[in-house]
Length: 239
Image (cartoon, rainbow, N blue to C red; front, side):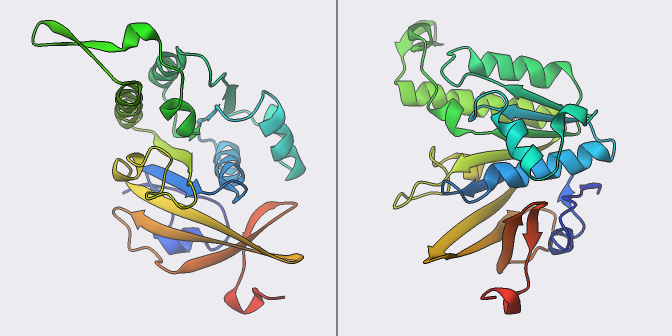
């Protein structure tokens, strides 16, 4: 089985050399844990290695993601194989645009940041009914968005690309995602954590699931610096 490397030192060794090709992997965590940085770092490094990469930015205004990457020394404007598309999450035709973009180009690696923009996307009144046994039946808005999510997952799976999906974990809510169903549709799950104590901060990640891999199951410490995410040894945690 082929694998997509993260190119984060030592992380690939925890997942048998990288993410299995064609897998859909969820990156989850509360706000500020580093989800977008992790994804942009993986896509940038793979683009430099010749992989065709697509970053679908539904969370930040156009240019903000590119600026965030530049702070870490990654110039997205000069990265030949990396395409970044920033979209308005309030556009009710968002899902159709995503499905079209995914289908028209064969990408090796896709990031969709984030699923929350789809599950909370405004619903067009025309979408609140569906045909069932010859009759039109009403649909609740939350069910429309669940159908949207499933259509996006189906398109991503059909594309054969390796996919990173981000979603916000809501504190004190059951489930790893805001929609509470995406975690069951993914091949892998990486959860990011952050704890601030006084002037100190502690970051960690945990590989909760990675099909076709004998992966590390404990907490993996990391920090975010001028070069992006760097793993830390446990003995250095309190330095």
